[in-house]
Each structure stands twice: as structure tokens, then as C-alpha cells.
Image (cartoon, rainbow, N blue to C red):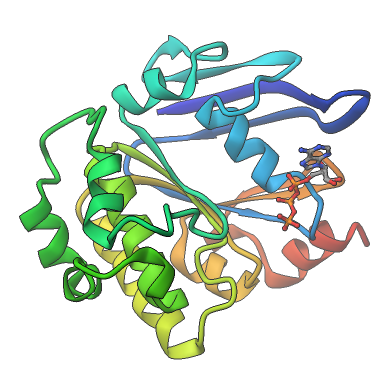
Length: 231
Ligand code: ATP
């Protein structure tokens, strides 16, 4: 479904990614692991078109999308739940969700289905985003991404800063998304959770791929070694 080949990404003179390659087949979930600053968010931004690579290619559903702007990718069915949720604080939860529907790739996720799937987002639909708790914001951020009718969802640090019980709820949503047939790329600091929720794992170390494996075939020690760059 998505194939990344030899991607280099720079911020000015600073190189954040070096020859990163990975592939993700339809219906699978891939965990992108790595320490702070390893380049995980940068890779998601390059897949979304928010930051263009200086070399390499991104192919999605057979087409080269490397240079496409974000709205064209949304229309083709890619959506991102950004780190920190990034809602419009003065809009209500529902208005934020509707923003996601503006360039919808498909009508698969009308509001009623989203609210069925994410009851927490339904409960707070009329409240301003600025008044929501972390867990409520996360539910609304996922709802906004679903409103665009995605086939590929990029989820950045969805459990960061949430209470353990709320993290559990968020991962129930992730399981539901998998059952609905979505393809997922998940950035997650919690290794055990990432390995438990995903089929494949790619570990980045200082902007380079240090490990690519099916989660079932990688021992926790392998992943930890790749994460910290120890042998
Ligand atoms: P974290 O878990 O902290 O979000 P990450 O793995 O997502 O880490 P990135 O945010 O992708 O890492 O950052 C990768 C590298 O690129 C870091 O060294 C970071 O300082 C640098 N970087 C990220 N964004 C920018 C930017 N806008 N300008 C300059 N450098 C940046």
C-alpha cells in the first residue's frame, strides 16, 4: 500500500533522515519505534507531504506521491493524527471533526458512524476543544482523521500524556480500526504496546532504519538494542 524508498529529509543543513526505506501492505499495522529525535515524526510528515524529502520516493497505492501536497494525499486516502492532537482550540469538537471532512477521500465515515465508533467524541461534540481533557482531545483528533475517509492512517504518539486507563481506551479504538480494514502506521514510545498492537516494526536510530521485522519474529531484546543502538 505504501512503499518508501531511500528517503532523505533535511531541515535546512540538518539531515534528519538518511536513506529510509520501508513498506507496508494493505490491512497491516506497522509500529515505528525509536528514541526522541530519531526522526519518527519527520518520516510521518514526509509521508503526509507536510515536509518534502530531498531524495528518495514515496509510492502509495502504486502511484508516486513523493511531491504531492498534503491535501492531494488526503484526497487519495491518507490521514494523520498529529502528535499533540493539534485541534483548533476555539472551535467545538464537532467543528474540528468537520474540518477533517472537507476533502474527504470517501464517504465511509459519516459523523454518525464516527460517533458510534468513538462515543467519547460524541459526548463532547458541542464543547470547545480548549475545554477538553487529553483523552477527549485524542478521541476528537482520531475522529477528525476518520472524517476524511482514510485507507491509510498515520498515528503519532497517540498515548503520550494520557492516563493509563485512557491509553487503554485509545488502543481499543486502534483495534477497532484494524478490524475495519484500515492500514495503520503508529508512532509509539511504549515498545510493549507498539509490539502488541502491530504486525510489523521498524526502528529508527538517529535517522536511519536500525531494524525491520514482523513483530512476531523480533524479540523484545532485538527491538530494544535497535532502539538504543546497542548490540
Ligand atoms: P520525538 O519522539 O521527540 O517526537 P522523533 O523521532 O519524532 O522524536 P523528529 O521530531 O522527527 O524525531 O526529529 C528528528 C530530528 O530532526 C531531531 O534531531 C529534531 O531536532 C530535528 N527536527 C525536527 N523538526 C525540526 C525542524 N522543524 N527544524 C529543524 N530540525 C528539526
